[in-house]
Image 1 (spheres, rainbow, N blue to C red):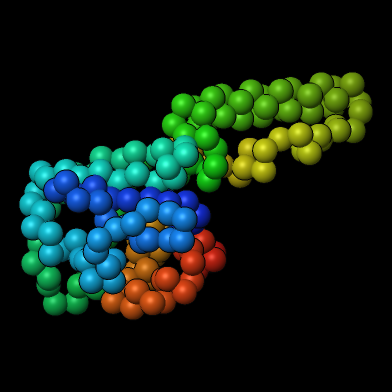
Image 2: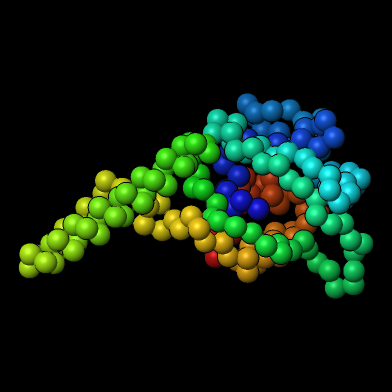
Length: 179
């Protein structure tokens, strides 16, 4: 749900058991992720479990089950009913570093705009020094969340539901969701 590209080790911790995909040089998981389905774990509304992405940056999430419904006719995949804020960029350094990076992004944008306005007021052509900014400064909008885009990604993901060899061979989700 976060939009990261499966570039780092990650795990779900549910009922005292860790679930994930084992990679060479990574963690070991006793269960085959192709055979474990969240619907088979007995979760009920109000239950919580954790998800950790990138063991270096350590993005720890607490997931709460809001509702469990029986499969309805025409049901094809989970849907996102609400969300807030954008996914942090990969390798930004973890939660605290991300907060610092957002302050840096805001300061850089404010300084850049101030320099542009000053150049225009002086009758000069603004010099945009974009080389010294992290790549994501220009495109990351931390306060935006696109529920429709999220649901398109979920629909696309669940087209391949049940074919875990597809995801293992792919080695990551980022190119699959490029559109």
